[in-house]
Length: 270
Image 1 (tube, rainbow, N blue to C red):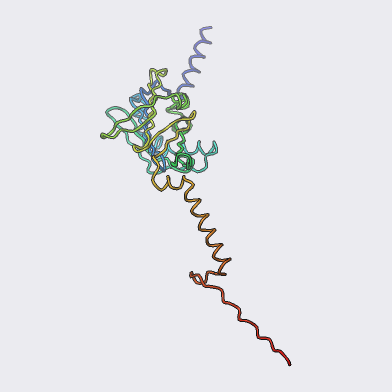
Image 2 (tube, rainbow, N blue to C red):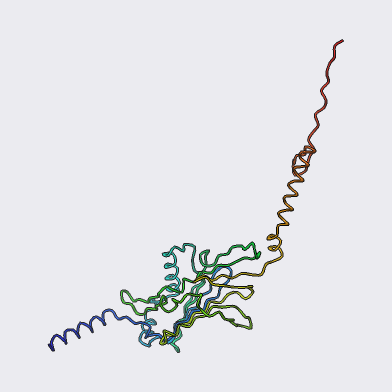
């Protein structure tokens, strides 16, 4: 019996040595801050207070995590889910030895990330923002060995429609934002904040999709009224009337009256 117990212990220790897996207990906080504009989203991800042993391993093997690791993972998952028009730009990553933290940033863009349409009722542009990028897990691996996994699909699974809508103040500028602090993950305390442009007129959420719009411009207001349609119809009617009444045709950009046919002379024999 004692031999069996020793054998099981040896197997357990061997399995841990071959494939150690570190989870959220090795990290004390993850924070997403995302700034939305008309063309995409500037994403900042901070992983704080990483376990000292894990942090040293990452430092020794920088190939575990490069500036492309996180954005490529997100973009690849989005494309697998059918979002073809998505890409990333300007990736960067820094390590802070004092706080044992990793800060990554990148610009997520494409028609599937931020798109817009026109609301003819309010004469405004309505922008649509994809937020699914926050739900893909990130893994750091050294060969076949998984060093660290961040379960974003669990941390931020609550629909954005249930997040807190706040006034986000930065540099004296107030912006509307959607904020979520997952207090259920009390050891990790995940935070995500999606900040919208400063000059929007209103915003709303449908499940996980954010919408926002700008105030209507005078030009858009004019387009939304039937006056311009009536004006075009009047111009067309006048042009048709003149063409029928005077037989005008347009040549070389100028209206030219159709040439009149001279009367035909008839010979009379006496």
